[in-house]
Length: 428
Ligand SMILES: Nc1nc2c(ncn2[C@@H]2O[C@H](COP(=O)(O)OP(=O)(O)OP(=O)(O)O)[C@@H](O)[C@H]2O)c(=O)[nH]1
Ligand SMILES: [Mg+2]
Image (cartoon, helix red, strand yellow):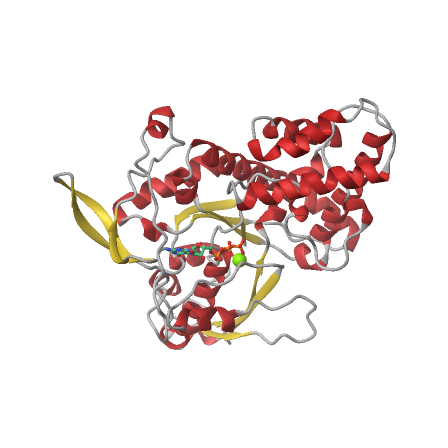
């Protein structure tokens, strides 16, 4: 389960756990999944941690935050974590007389920043430097770093202190681009979200054009970084992945304007492009390393545009289609597209705006109480220049619905049920 930073991954896992557990207890929380099961009743429990080395997803803390007065959204995620559920699924049809099938579902909350390291595994240092530097050219927040790299003599000699200074400037610029400019297409991802444990010295690199001793040093470090990212991917943890949910908050990207949207679009297409070759690439590497056959391959991908409760039902078809246009490519994986709200905070409402009725939503906006919102027309294609010339697309930030009873009755959602029915279709 992955998505760019702030895409809504933690909210998704929290809602998924609460709703599956409540469904197992007989609540009608996930209608599309129930329809797929055709009357068979799931039993669901949180799996034991056992001797697992991966931190567990803090389901309890996130539910407590949503149950508190006032309710709060889950905190920003700082590391990889795992949600594991044990399911028992009665068999369908004539096989119903055989014992129920037992499944363990493991969901990995994979930091969005790391998704953008996948394309690096296939890119040389000089190609990466070229494209990274080109993206920074007109970026005001990059001026300190760019001034430093311009001032370096061409063919600069191998110098660890210079490498460290450049790295420090580059990395603090990445942080500002994410936190102040809201950009997502930022590489390398582990500069923003470090891997656990002490940081190896080879992280100290930055993009630089040309040749010479310093470039040689940076290139060696870049290769070491790419190797470490590759090792992570073939570790037992990732080697077991066989389906994927990719999330993006396209509504916020639309509201952030032309440049912000272009950045999200580029980041998504880089990540989706890396996934296209991932299956064939992983296949050979995992087979080689583990002498296992057949190696697991990603066979199902769900693409979800999140926070879809910001727009009324009539607009969600456009949102789904926009996600499809931005990521859709021919692959041998089964894929589907969703307009998802993991934790629905609004209801649809009709609003009289400038003398006409529009399909709006109603929810609690921080500092304003209950308010109506119509963010504007969601485009079903990447918008053209005419779209950006109006500033009518605006998004409020809704407070989470307070959910004191989610452990028992689950929580309101949009299309989370359909997404799960697709993702698990073959095992159900
Ligand atoms: N209205 C609404 N807002 C949501 C929903 N899901 C997420 N959000 C908003 O998006 C923010 C980020 O959600 P998270 O689930 O923390 O996102 P994340 O992808 O885990 O973020 P990082 O861990 O920082 O990468 C939340 O704090 C909410 O403001 C949803 O279903 N509806
Ligand atoms: Mg998170």
